[in-house]
Length: 65
View 1 (cartoon, helix red, strand yellow):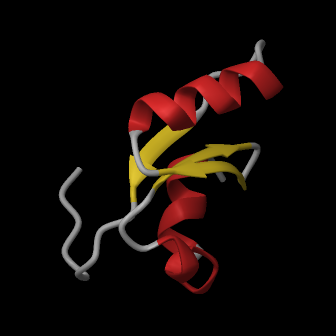
View 2 (cartoon, rainbow, N blue to C red):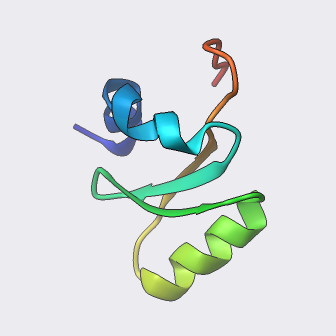
């Protein structure tokens, strides 16, 4: 399972992040924030050798990727 698959299957886990940007590494939410830039900065500091999956958790149930 990759990070995208994790995101699609973890609806109960991401409900606390509605309206926020999140970063996922190794099927775990490792950063959250109000902007993608803020989240990327945080995750690159903590996981410099990893490529995170970054997305905004939508406020409604429709999500276009």
